[in-house]
Length: 111
Image (cartoon, rainbow, N blue to C red; front, side, top):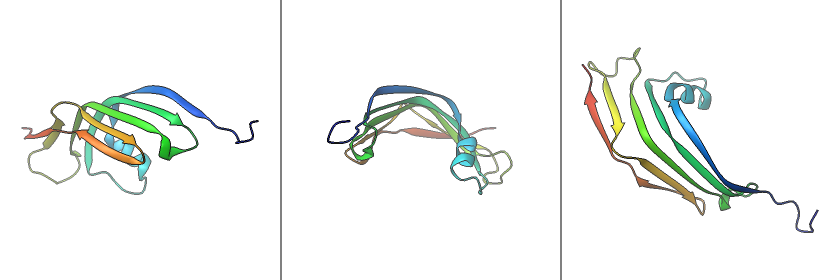
C-alpha cells in the first residue's frame, strides 16, 4: 500500500438505462409514498473519476426518451396529460455541480 493510502479510480463507464419505469424508481427512492405519476425514461449514464471522492467525479446523463403523466388511478386531470421531451435531456456533474445542458419538452392531452 502506498503511503498516501488506497486510491480507487473509476475508469470511464457507460451504462445504458433501458425504459426505466418512473413509478418503480419512485417506490425505490421513497417506499412510504404512493406515486401519483407514471412514465418512463431511457438514456445513457457515463461516470469517471476517483471512486472515493465523489466531489471529483465527473458524470454525464443523456436521456433521449422521457415521458411522464398522471398515474391511471389518480384524478389529477380529466383527460390524461403526457409530457415528453423534444430532443435529448443532457445533465452533467463536475466540480460538485450539476448542470442541465438541455431540456425541452412538450405536453399533450391524450384522448
